[in-house]
Structure formats: C-alpha cells, structure tokens
Length: 307
Image 1 (cartoon, rainbow, N blue to C red):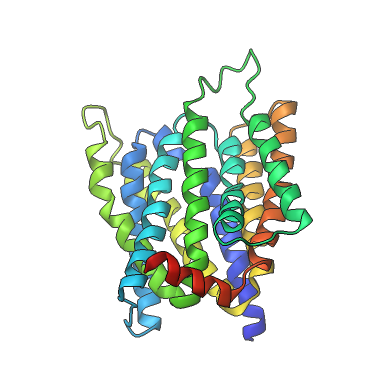
Image 2: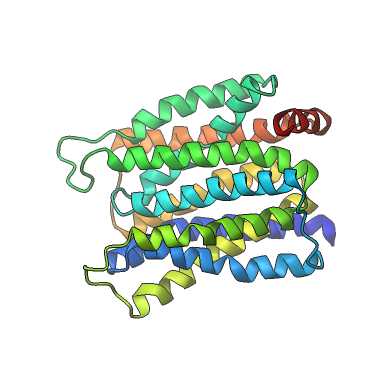
C-alpha cells in the first residue's frame, strides 16, 4: 500500500495547489484585503501542523541547526506568500503563477554556485527556457487594459526569488530534519508574520466580513495548507524525481486553465507562448533539482555554512 501512497499524496497536492492558485484572487475582489487573506492562510496552517506533530509524537528537532534552517525556510516561504497575496491584487493568476513556478531555477543556480554541483544538459536548457519565459510572460500589448504597470511583475519576481532560495535551504533540511518539524517551523514563521500583515491592512476601507471574506478565504487557503502537508508525505513514500515535476509543473497548469475559464479571458499569443515555455522549463528544472542531490555532500556543506 505504501508504494501507492506517494502518488495519492502527490495528486492531492497537485490538485489542491492548482485550485488554490486559481481561486485565491476571489476574496480580494469581493472586498477582503490580501493582507487579511494572508492572516487567514497562516491560521489554516495550524490544523495540518497539529496533525504532523501528532504523527511524530510532538518530538520536534530544536537544536541550533534545525532552528536556523526551519526559520530560514519558514520566513522565506511565508514572506513569499505575503508578497504573493499583494501581487495577485494587481496582476492575474494565470500570468503570475507560471513565473513563480520557475523558482527552481534559483535553487539550481545556487546549488551550482555554492555547492559546486554539476547539472545536466536538460538543467541548462531549463534555465535558458526560464530566462526566455519571464519576458514573454511580462509582455503587455498596447491595448491591454486588464493589467497596468509592472509592479505585479516585481512582486512575482520577489516570490520567485524567495521560494527559490527556500528550496535551496530545504535541500539541507531534508537531510537532517523530519518533514514534520520543517512544516512546524513553516507554520510558526507564518504566524509570526501575521501582525505585520495586519499592520499593512488599510482598515479605513470597507472590508467584507461576510461569507465571501474570511470564511471563503479559509476554505480556499486550507487547500494550500493541506497540499503542503501532503507533499511532505509524497516525498517520504515516493521518489522526489517524480514528485517534484508532478507538483511543480502540473499544479500551475491547473491554475492557468481554471483562471482562464473563470475569468473568461484568453491570453495574448506572446503570453501564451511564455506559459508553455515556463511550464516546460519548470518540468526540466524540477527533474534536475531532485536528481542531482547527494546527501553526503549536502551534509558536509551544511556543517560548513552553519558552523
């Protein structure tokens, strides 16, 4: 049965993250600020975290190295989420998520530069495609009234770098920490940033406190939280070289398709080409990122970086 569990968990993550990405904009459009949407997201991380901690009998790694790695992973992930919530209020999900999905390029490049890892040809092809995809996705035709300015692109790139660096630190943590402990630190840091999100909220504006506000937000954000916990177990029972491409490349496709249907728009030809190039790059990078990991080499580098 365990041989099938990885696929079940990976499919749940892929579906949940894909749907979450498509519907995340709805509550802000209904009058519930993105900053408060972040607060709701951080709260939805608590139930899955409690489940994870129960599974390991509340035994969390709390040595110096684990705390540092957990904090780095958590703050980069939660900070990226906070930026993402704001970015989706300016730009459409069907463009932003393909850019964010390219974040493994940062992880791969950091591994090459810092860990001196050697990547395969498909890794360099993925990096090249990512560099091509970003300007294609950011293209705005003169008659495009749906997206104004390039602030959304700056924010999307902020998430792109934050989650890419997070992936780099996660390579270390997975060798010395339990996945449940990593998830615990991700939850704690997410909650720690909630006061900042509240301070950023403009309470002078009308806020939708009805069903389409915090309640619908909770229903949407729990998809992200449960998906994050499921991917922990997908990696535990399956091979990362299969799990990573499935979740990193297919989830954005689901987001794109649902978003285009939901908002009844069709992207410009240049943007559409960018989407295809981005998903191809994501798939190649996800394969390379996971297939080049060497546990012994990483553990030695961890000690050097943290000592």
